[in-house]
Image 1 (cartoon, each protein chain N blue to C red):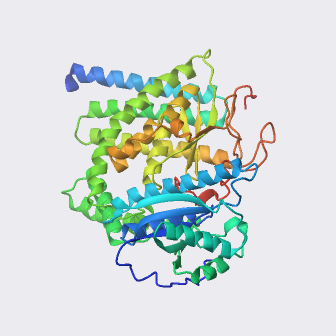
Image 2: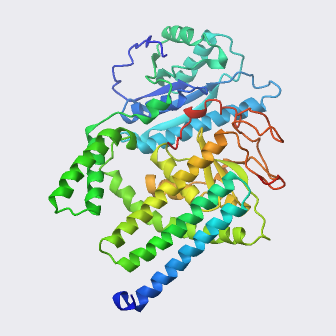
Image 3: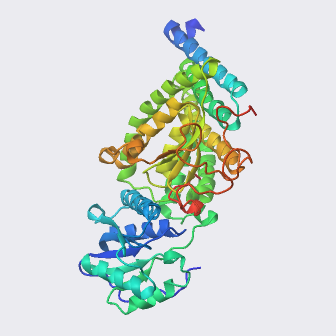
Length: 109
Length: 399
């Protein structure tokens, strides 16, 4: 692997993968820790956008500009368009169902 | 629904010089479309100035008129925001010098019937050199459901030209299904084919053939939905360029907010303080507001819940994110992408007083919910600013 892409690119790949892992971990923690559907929708979509974004950037660097690298950049774009749309759909559905967002002092639900 | 009584007096002969038009307005489901119709007429060279007027239902010296004045001011503000957004959206030779004016008339005396309204309207028209009156088809001043007919009748005795705006109440189906045009079809087809071939091999005959077939299917089924206006050859490249400037800015914002929010999530000692907020945004409907809403959602800590009546309802996770939202930098960037640098210079939502907080200790407005959870907050009264009842008639939808 080191021979194939050289030490600089390898370092970038490792760094981006770790960043991706970190933000995915944050996203997961948020889903468990936060109190209601709205705040969970925040972290499930947004931290995850960056998590998947960094991971795909690592893939793009590893794969190079040909073929797979270009396609993973398109995937990043796709995620950046669809993730907020999905989060909005969840939040809007919750709002129309009459779910009032949790505020400080409420019970956890 | 609109009665076909369009009394087309002599309104259809285009006047040799562009005149002014007076439009009495109130909050109706068709108001948004009426505004668009007027802006388009003006852009086509029919009018050079549009006067939106509201009849006061009080006298200036009445007690307790502050509330009514506020709601009328909000209505007029909303109308001029819509008109401004439409002006930025339409193409037309004369679009640059269209003047939009809003006014309250009739605050000097009580108005009882159609004749009173017409008298005030004519006086206003005379004063401002207007020769035409355009009526919103659902316009019924002061809740008098039978007035429109007599109003049109009474107007016919003046020398004002009267016509009704050819608009109908929006319905879900109509909002999604726009006209099919050749240009939209070609644009959707071309974009789909380019995307397909970018993934495949443009030189391989099978990819070419299947790409053409797929792009045709996409264009046939989706060209009417995905594009709500013909893409303009002059503006689209500029917008794409400005969008390319915006993307790194947005990425930086996302990264910055993500670190702040990640810290709050990972550190149990840092409390979250989520609230639902309202922000009235000044961007056009369709793609611009979708871009803004998606950017807000992409930025961690803020999540767009609803677009209603020119307002975005945004859920914020921590006060820091809420304050950033009220500073309006994403709104300015969206205006930059779609309308250019000039349009991006505007006061922040906070300075415009276009913001509201629905929850928590800092709440400034009543929670507007669809239904309450039966607990601590107001019942199912969807009043946010006195006009939220025409829910989906507003300027923005995110569908």
